[in-house]
Length: 113
Image 1 (cartoon, rainbow, N blue to C red):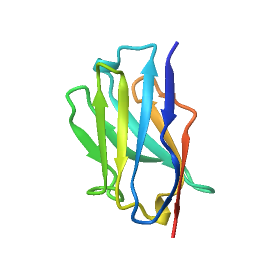
Image 2: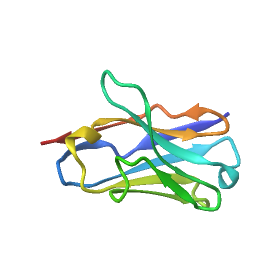
Image 3: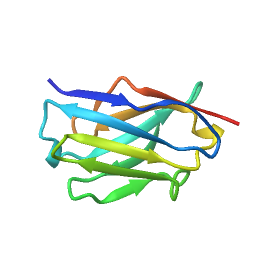
């Protein structure tokens, strides 16, 4: 079955960096549009970034220039490199296979001011 397992979250000071990973299984990863979303307390889940099978990328305006999404098709992993983190980036970050509407369990990112 489809599985998405996120890791790499944690507590970081404002201005710091983190790299999230999402290990995928149960589908043809190399042919899949993958995305990262996030949900802050009391807010709706929002789009962060996406990457196509051909490695075209798209970002939310709020993270452009600070976050980078990438993928390793051999390892079946999608990454989210987050630089210059801000307290407003605090959220649970979820990995998603967009076409299958499948989600991981999420990983908590907390940015202290």
